[in-house]
Amino acid sequence: MKCIAYVSRVPISNRTIRMPTGLSDIVSVSRKHNPKSQITGIISYRDGQYLQVLEGPYLEVDKLMSKIASDPRHEDLWVFLDVRVIKRSFNNWAVSVFDFVDQGNFFNAFIENNSAVLNSFNESQQRRIQPFIDIKKSDTVPEKYYEGKDLRLLAWPDLNNESQPQMIMNLCIKLTKKPYSFNALADSGEFGSHHQVTQIIREFDRLGLLSVTEPAPIHEQTVNEKKPNKFYGAIKKFLGMR
Ligand SMILES: Cc1cc2nc3c(=O)[nH]c(=O)nc-3n(C[C@H](O)[C@H](O)[C@H](O)COP(=O)(O)O)c2cc1C
Image (spheres, rainbow, N blue to C red):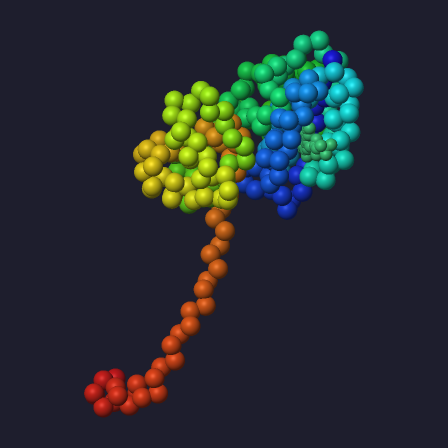
């Protein structure tokens, strides 16, 4: 079995605050293909870059890597790890979007196991992968972070372990079609208190399922100002108004 890890850059036009556009398509195709090829791994996005780890049979990993390398949704791909392994590091994931804040233990073990390789990189190479290694340190998102932002779900959470699957499903439906305002969601009362909505959203975000964007500017409607009545001035004058 082999393990490949790479970082790649997302073209600027596809970047949003937390997740690049097109990620949900990548995730759904990966969920379909990877189990068939016995490939597991993780994908994450930070600061305009993807980091993906793929592990599985030699042939399958190489086949997938050559497909991924020619995918126009990213560029400047650097395979920073290509090693033979006897054990998987991400046994449970058929390449899911993965947030290291949440699943830090597995990623830390992965980094630890490969520290010799990672430490051999020069300064600019280290800098390139550092945002992913720093993830563990990053704090949880503050309560007010989503205020005034638009949210969209990139992939659905696993509803099997949810205590209120129907409610979470309704919330997911709202966030699926197009960006939906956090404030509208929280103010509707449909999904509990403001705080409860924040908790759910934060969880989606931690799992890397969410795109958070500034709301699109509202195009000013051209207000058709009524032309003043030509008699208006005369009437005002007549009534003694100024
Ligand atoms: C960053 C990134 C990661 C990707 N990861 C996978 C993956 O793990 N599995 C997968 O099947 N496709 C992945 N893709 C998509 C493939 O490049 C390709 O579009 C997809 O496998 C569809 O191939 P097909 O047209 O042969 O069905 C990824 C694409 C990008 C940009």
